[in-house]
Length: 179
Length: 294
Image (cartoon, rainbow over the protein chains, first blue to last red):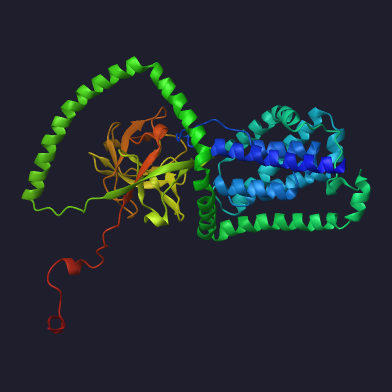
């Protein structure tokens, strides 16, 4: 039984990484080099958060680090900043997973929205403090809005692709003492 | 059974905690390094890109080809209209060609009469676009030319007609092109025929802004925008586009380069002329010690 579960974890970790690489391909492929106004949701971040609530073993911290540091490098983002913030918020969600499991979906959506908002705020503050180039408040708020709006759709996608539910048990270190 | 397994591995939790703390710290250190020593951090970035991106070419090919097929299909749908437009344009171009040939001959004659020394002809190397920036807020792309092809940071990139951007980051086999449309792109330009100088500043749209124009009144929509060569990054007289007015009466640049169909780029090999720092060397004979004693 445990062996099967281990295999399932490894398989789903590969699946998570595969979806990330696929997303990266779509973003990087030079289909058109015209500047566009179409904001895409940060799908990898949303999938990570959803999986941490439903099955945290699929997204261990080292996999999150690997994924987001790679996207920082390849997508011309401030090196390490996104990874740093994502690791903090995912760890916060991981540690409070029992509370998220008990929540209704609407409450989960609200709390995740607040977390995304504060993470973006912290990112902007760090960029301002370090005198780095920023995208502007309007663009940041638009990005948060798109992420929040897309959250339920990504939840459905994750349920279908990873076959996970909120009630799923986990052997993740953060909640081991609580289960 | 799971609990027994966990009891056996009771060190996993503190180890995982230490590992996670270390990784968070490493991420933050990356950010600090990026901020404090940006050139070095960007070198690390471009070397990572250099290792990964050329290997992605085979995987990118289907996505790129599929999108090109969709674009071609859309283009075929209005084949008849396009044909008519092309015939009209060809007719106009023939008359322009005649005019250009006459002007070229006249120009050559006048240059010869005045004994003008021309700048050496610019030569170029062509490269293929591998990937774009992948971000809505960054306008750049990676091409398959790098240090091994003799590429130097700052060289201009053109699409054959107009300026596209400049090299900003060179790896061994790849380089990043920063487009004129990026918010961090500022290029000194010359507006013809009024010879007004300005700065072309990227704004994340296909129409970059024209800022700091010496005299706005002398600039008209339709005027040609060329690189001025000021600052020594770009050679002078590279075509950028035309002046246009947006809805709020702000002067913008209508770029000549076709950004929607960019696939290959020309990188202009350019070595700036030696600066003239001592005007006395240029005018009159060099002063000898004997002359100065008098």
